[in-house]
Image 1: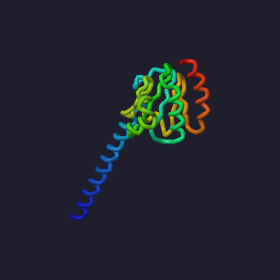
Image 2: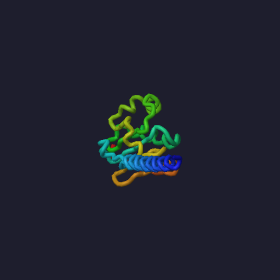
Image 3: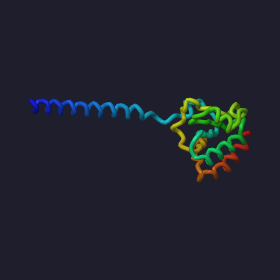
Image 4: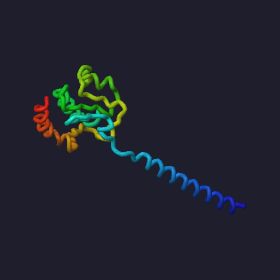
Length: 149
């Protein structure tokens, strides 16, 4: 009788293991969605600056300063993502500034997977990481944006 129980127990454990493997495989495959696309968010501008609300503090502060200098630019869109506290964002960036026509608040975190902990500039043909080593890109972008105001 003890042998029967052990054999039954082994079969049940094996079956449970296979069910677990199938469930985990299904979950991992369903979480492999493609990276969000700016076209899905309907952003049509020559330059798009995506700024996460949290991450590298110095990088984000620099991105916000750059964004404030280019509010209402016709070819520049500012997107805030990874928004944890909308009120804090409005206080930090400015209530009036958040209402500018070229500022987009990604409150549904559609673009959360598009950026890490630092701002990203999307141009017509490249994605530029604006971490501490990428600050020099702001000077080049400054020149380009001066032409499109």
